[in-house]
Length: 197
Image: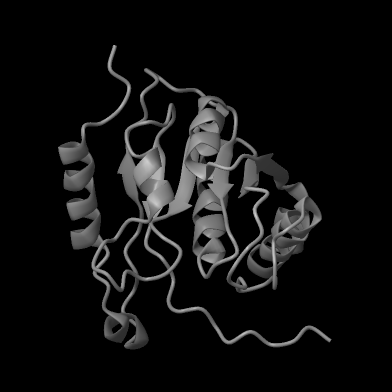
């Protein structure tokens, strides 16, 4: 049984996402509502996972990802789990919230910050948290998808300056997840980092 999409199918999905998520900052600055998720079927027949997973990173997207995933978890009557894949490699570029994500404790702080920045305190308290340690985020999320009812991700960390609506991790996920995959448009450019003192 074939369990992955051929490259042309991935390109077709990317084209559909490109149509759905036009990378036009002027439209969002004018207050036009951003599009919703593009849903991609999973490989498992009748996937009945027990949790909605929101995969987040230290970029501009966790708010949209968390809010969408929280709404889906409520609708499905299952818990919400926020997940970060910690690669164990030093970060070369500072993130939006953390200057570095070199240690697993940094990933733990990142999860707390994004939860309490984007959900109500009660929602954040009730959310499961998981840090996966894997040098390949795509591989880790594909494995996690076997226990999920839905995996929610941003199409990429930042708006597509190169015209490609998909980041590398999402390309790895397309056609490989056991559960359905919800791909959301990225948020705008990263805000200017302010010192935390």
